[in-house]
Image (cartoon, rainbow, N blue to C red; front, side, top):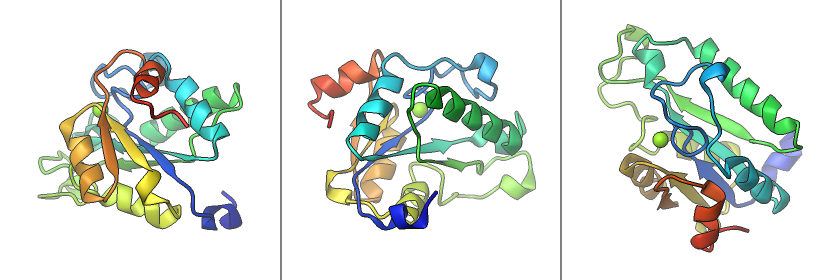
Length: 176
Ligand SMILES: [Mg+2]
């Protein structure tokens, strides 16, 4: 990512992953099990074209629980990026939290991981990496913990009830 581009202050669309970008089958870790939520790619495209940053903010306790490795998740995210690229679409960055209070693997065990939503750590790191117009930015999540993390980071949160993500944001009047 070019350092100069990063210095420009822009609004950001923060997206939870499971249940917002892809169907949440529970601990999705392989492209073969991955299915885009209807309208998700169109939303990414709309915000790309409007000059917003698109940043994924995802709890991945499946790593700490030992269900899959961090490398598996990175491979899945790369597959998402590659799939989007075929349509000229872009996710600017992924932030993930592998930590969990009851992680099987000690390296991922933490009593209250600062990055794990509802804590705001990932959003705060994202905004440190990408200068963000916080007032016009917002987060879309499918759980209260997503909205709580956004609140604690000073960003508005929208609860996605499922269905078509593009239709939802259109109905909310939130398409750029
Ligand atoms: Mg979710």
